[in-house]
Length: 330
Image (cartoon, rainbow, N blue to C red; front, side, top):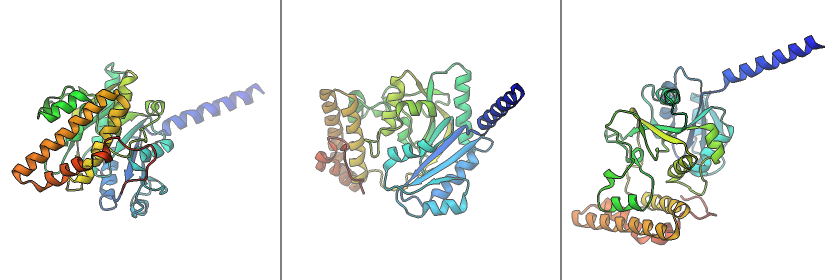
């Protein structure tokens, strides 16, 4: 009997070691929405950029546009979850994370394209941070670059608040404290990472309950970073790592996009600020739209007039944030 028990224990230990060896270092999570035209490029780059890493790749389509069938044909190693409706960014990533097995989770937008070894470099950066004594790090990121070569403003965000909204209003958004300095090529501790390319500890993600599903889109990564910091964990970015972020819409100042952006920000203000501070922050956001609309009128910029005009005219739509019970926006 002891010999049999020892053999059983040895078998259990061997199975545990095998499971640990098979466990991915990272689960790459991609939530698609009308992304069939570029989803293959996204996964092709991501698979190449993680060469040499133990990575798993996961996808869920929120538009049922054929992206899932395309991936099943071209990338059979990608775990494709069945269509469950238009879940939005937060809920879509939460659903993927429920099935993820990696030690870390990489949120990857379908319009973000890796071209070299960016995922492997980000994982190495995270491991080096731990080795150098930064064991309290909870999330890591990089610089995202637009197709025209400019730095994507999403990767240089600061924590939302009254001061940040005021500095944007008076034209001093570039001096907001804590923002990533993309031209300073050294690792930097930052308050916010872009959700387009964001690495998070899986255990911390689960402790926090993932992304807050009250946000259908916009500011959900800011909210997550706020909660990560509230638990005492640090957030780091390495500007030496750069990925291409092709926003795809071609209309960054469209009224539809800006109204949804304001809705996300308003949700954050109401959640994390007191009533007075939230009202002030939202008022500053409205005043910012007013000044930009006026600038567009003076300079005859149709995109400013359409975009910021929508923010001004649809204030009731975004002022109270995303409703608790809502239909998915079109």
